[in-house]
Image (cartoon, rainbow, N blue to C red):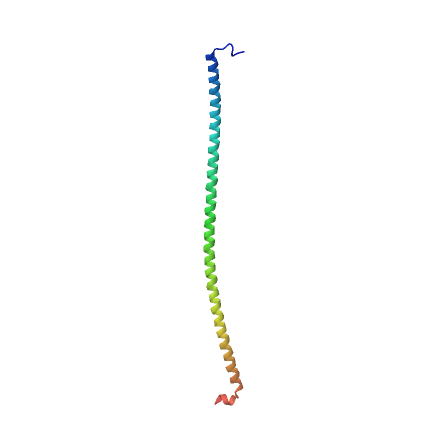
Length: 117
């Protein structure tokens, strides 16, 4: 065997060199993994920023929609109030028209010579 021909110092040196190579390979693999994790972290941060921006945009759209709804609701109340007032005026005008029609009928029923007096 090859170990039988080597001194303990040479064997220890080979074991040390092999362990050092394995450690260097492991360190390079860890460095690659760290680089990959950093890239993934950057992607995640970017996606998180995009999500937050989208959420902020959605919140702003909700606020705008709420403002519009409030405005429309107020306008609807104003329009409803104006319609009620217009209906009251229409009813009043209708009553006055009926009264005027009754007076006209009364006047028409009076003979013309009595009106002249």
